[in-house]
Image 1 (spheres, one colour):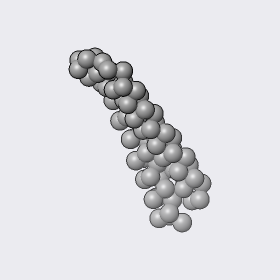
Image 2 (cartoon, rainbow, N blue to C red):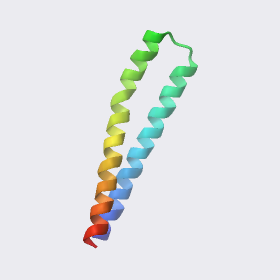
Image 3 (cartoon, rainbow, N blue to C red):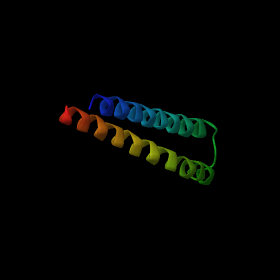
Length: 71
């Protein structure tokens, strides 16, 4: 089950990279000085990336825990 641990770690790292990407996009949108409605619209476009990345991160961590449990 060693492969499950490494695959889970890779998926979790991919999710973490996506979370950092969404943080970067939100910060850059905030620094642009957009109006409240424009900022809200931009954040709503970034939200699926954030949620998908969080999902990947959780699934990856579950795979790591399962791999450790089965080893």
